[in-house]
Image (cartoon, rainbow, N blue to C red; front, side, top):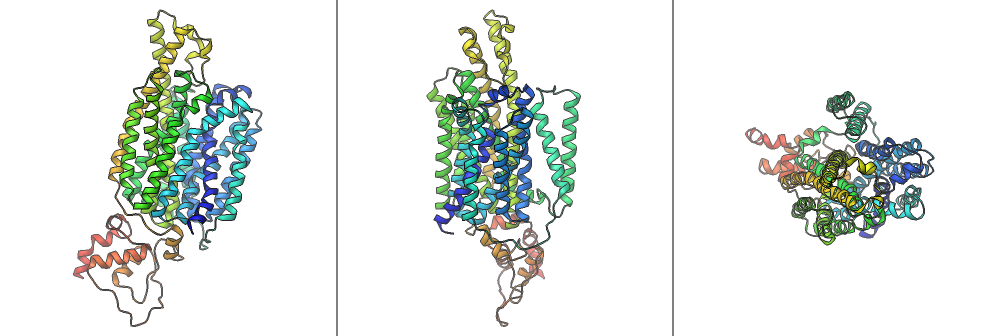
Length: 591
């Protein structure tokens, strides 16, 4: 595909990703008014957010695995249709139960879009060229995550909160039309599809129970209660059973053999903390702007623009440089350092910190996330076999969302405890009875600070300023983990073939390139056997000379043929398919 053709097809994918991200962020500033209009309770307030995050997180690896088994374009369109229909239904909700139900279906559609957009990009763009296009995707995800609350506040203040759900519908329909007309993927070879139902059910159940536990703990039940213990133990048992089932399944939802790949494992660990930073900042920066700085929901979104601009600039510039020079690791190391520095600096803010200073800190975080987030997916796609690229890509997104959801829940609990303590201490020092604050202690809705006397309002704002700073201080050490594991990522050269080209080279059986049966050397045939392939019958002349050379050369050449692309030394040593050949090369030489 030419650059123009790629951009045309990519426009539909990016529109789909934008509406997916907006679905989970656009209601954050509007939620108090939505729940109030629908006569909902505090439990409803929590579940409107939790339902979508839960459905998105749980369904992401399922969509990714299905994309390895069946038609990706059809799956992408199914996810878009599901999302659009659920959005329309949610916008017409007359009670919170209906709203929560359709938010679950929104989350399922969003999970499909989150997983499949990145997989389809790997089909049509080579890793070397994918850097700049990943920059576009990272920019869209960043705008959706940070800009969603701003859009939601503006819509709620002008034409009504129901447009929080309707606003993405035209974009989703347009994305569906563009994808149908411009995205052309080759048909997958027909084969019997084996669905790991047990694995899917256990993963969904275990992760759901885990996220419900951390989301509602300390709010709907005490952490030390019997309910809490049962939920935590139940989640652990279900996830342990999922691991056992995945080891035995022919087509596991999350292939555990992926964790033998150092690039995949290190990227997953790094993604956990990136998820905390990405999701946490959108939640807690909004609270800081509204509760510590006294801004309206709309202004709170506007004041986070420095972070949005940082994300936009870094994701696009770093992506373009990666495509131009083929070097990805320096940008990711710099990005992870900027993210850690930004989080540490944000832990020093107070309610009256100069906004120009806060803007610099937010921009640093944005620059860091933009350099790291999507490039983690890029290096994983570059290092795994084309037959499992869907499962690998969606797994990175899954763990990023999982880390973000758990991190936000834990940090939210910490924020509530800290703020309550700071307010109590401040009022006591001022000689005021803390009970005079009334509902102002709530950290799940925005207090009406305009009705609070000046001195008490200053105490409340100071408490939220310090509390949000403490939350960023908790997130900062996680960013150190990101630095460590980004530095440990094997510096594998980016490939120059798209997923479609690699699959074509791999032949109908997938996973490795067909091997010339007539002229293949013993090492090549051994590599094919190790990969689970039969050497293909060749049309080469009968007198073709077999390859000769050192065992190292023969193995590397055979690995390149089987993989369908040039294989670096690092990739060769990490590959479960070829590592045994490398380890036994001395024995092979003796033979």
